[in-house]
Image (cartoon, rainbow over all chains, first blue to last red; front, top):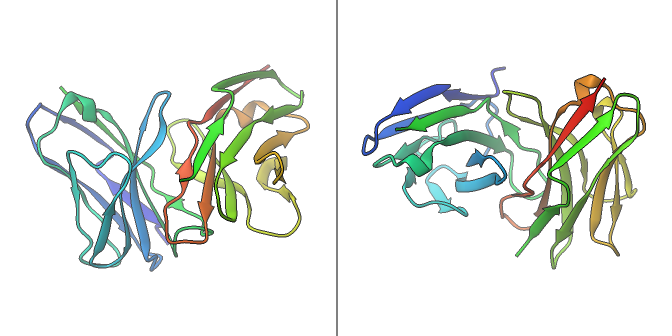
Length: 113
Length: 113
């Protein structure tokens, strides 16, 4: 049982490049989400999904796109990378939001030069 | 809207001493409360949760937390810490709707030998 798998673990981009952070879970969780973690800022929600075909914005969605075509996968796309998007990104999933426990991936560290 | 305040960004403590990490929340509805722990270079994992019932909740690794509705607090405690407890601790609040968890900014616990 792999849980939540994020790829890549590390990535360096140049300003203006685009890329996709992959997230896959094998627990049949309906709810998936992306957070970014920055020093002193804690975890901030970027986008989330309550099921296949449904996505919604979180606290800091600008510059990011998501889609949820399957229950298992929830990729995060950076459209035109900026230095302000240098961060550690975490994907998390659960059976639902609210009272349900989130299972986190190991994180993806992104540096934008 | 929900919010979470972790009152201390850093807490240094000597090994075998007690520790309390403070968390206050703001919510207008019934809440679910969580503490997650993040060890260096890892994702977050659940330490303990309060959903209902007894206000004293016990978690993994000897940690416990007490839900205090009148003070809107959910402080985390451990009577005797170990070097291995060095980590970042996040308090989070959820509700009965389909809304995502809201995380605090985190408290970095450093245990000193």
